[in-house]
Length: 346
Image 1 (cartoon, rainbow, N blue to C red):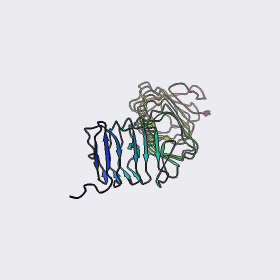
Image 2 (cartoon, rainbow, N blue to C red):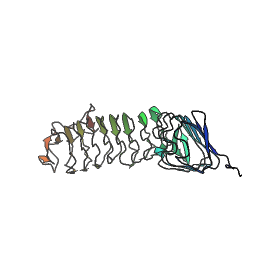
Image 3 (cartoon, one colour):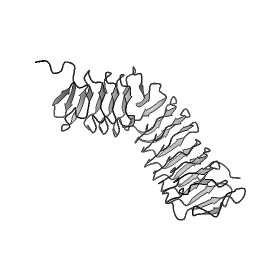
Image 4 (cartoon, one colour):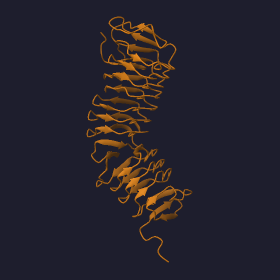
């Protein structure tokens, strides 16, 4: 009889003291006894990959160390490991499928490190980055409070802060690119996007349930940028966006008054869809191109306000919404429910 395992095996330890082992080169979701509570994993030397969802909802795991012989990680490998506090990624890992899912819902993960010998990934301030340390890839959901992005970062990748539990983020002027869904479903209460951002994705703050205030200094209002942010009451636009992309404020039911920058020449489809408390939109210049669906499911008392003189293109109604005259020459604000711009209207 030969030896069943001729190489060091992966050892799984459970809360009742029992263990199991595997010599598989790929750890799959069937490699452990799901009827038991897994407390630790000692990966064997033969393992080269961990399949998607392999350790999903292993709530007794508190630490995990991925050795250097493992080169690829599937989607959501440790998703739902709610008591995981510390994770180490070995130097061999060069592929992480959908990185934002790797530790999704690991709400106690605060210590994330990468072997310095890795040629693909690195960690800084417990955040997963690329090797060059200029791109944030994944932000651990156990970190709370305020997070200041280091000045060496130029890119916030897609879903980097997905479901992040921080309430404040400080984005430095070194950041030039914020990729789509960067802060999707995060618990931010406020955000300021600096003017340095020139590569601007869509859905940046989609479905942020606690977002109250936002300042956009960049010159783009992306598609669905603040869509489904039910507490959003104040947005200040200091940049010069040429248009508001579709669904930009869709479902922002607490917005009541909006000032459109004079640089805006187009308002695309469903921009204010579902803004049920929106009563006033101020336009400082000529009438922009406005999609027929821009004001769908808004408040029936919504009014559009324009200047009396030196503007063109306006009619008495736009898509059924009455147009009235702005009663003064300066738009100001800052109170709850108002989007403001820092410029005088001539």
